[in-house]
Length: 504
Image 1 (cartoon, rainbow, N blue to C red):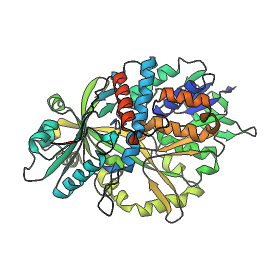
Image 2: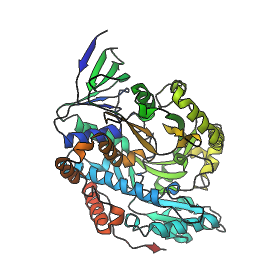
Image 3: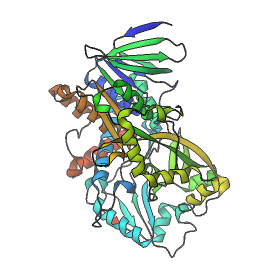
Image 4: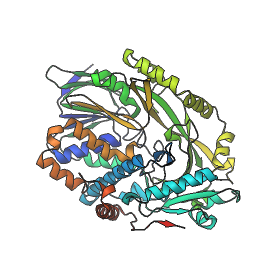
């Protein structure tokens, strides 16, 4: 078996949205860098970034109610919503820069305006949504959001949702016209199309990282096996990024960095109901999000979702959670057990004990029949018929489990960067809102792993070209928020408006 060695400056593991974003950042900031991308599948964006595996909401916190929890005193905590909305604006600015430059072509192939709605029923939930609206509308990022409890208005916004509903039950919705649908698979492939045209970039498909070992000189020796030829390659790199979706945890464990000690992962699988009736699909043009069931993970917030995938309009409902021991959709059933180590065994067991309601919820979801799933659909589409919907398998998500002094181990939702103290390696763990905030997350990687360079005048100047609002806070600067949002909307072919808060 042949074995060769290469010496790239950077190795990116995984050909998803995160590696694509980081790769372009690095080539824009340091054009002379050489980059090797390693992907175990034979396609780009075949796992978490793929359109059918990813929620595709363009998570901007317009409609996701789990980002605005109600506190014990009854007030609404909008801090997470502001953080996510702010981060999504960074992504829009970065994509619009690349579109203007011609680095990514035809933005309409990956981003489309689809209104974002939050919908609730019942007096208590209506009261909550009204308070949430009043809290959000004060922030520039959420200006233009509309609110209504009136039946005729709600019928205009979401006719399928309102048809056949009990008129005696209180209902309410918020409406954000500038919401988006994003095909992250198409976006990722477009980013990689640009990346592979740049000098010093090589992309290896059907190649799997088998080992990571730090040499005495501080470089990482990344052992890669070609799955078609069995040829092994040793990549000697100064910096390694592990952006392999659910596969990041096992690779992080192979690195043996002390910062990775105690981390574990809990896999959650996803499923959708996909509408097969074109007449129904055409009647709905929105992303309608509701409240999650008690005990369910955030990724399971139910929504009746218009998606544009490869130019075709689709209608999905879900997601329905399930459990699989795989960390990747194309992974192994041994992924979970092989990730267990002495340093993370106790945190994982502790997290399991403290999340028994979640376990029960997943068991219930996994054992549902098709009829059960359609019954859940009818809460959002009362006239839903079983023959108009079929099951679609979504991607795997691995929720982060980490050590906790008080509880032993805690289950975390969201994304987390784990990096070596010297900045030579970083791994991304977790799930939603992931892809939508990829630019903000990769900026954090740059801050953690390129501390000296990111503060240099050269990098600071370039970053402000890539992201006009870089270093400023849009949520505290109304004029800048409107200006940058208008610029990115114009470049990406999206709607834009300046709107005062309105109750209809």
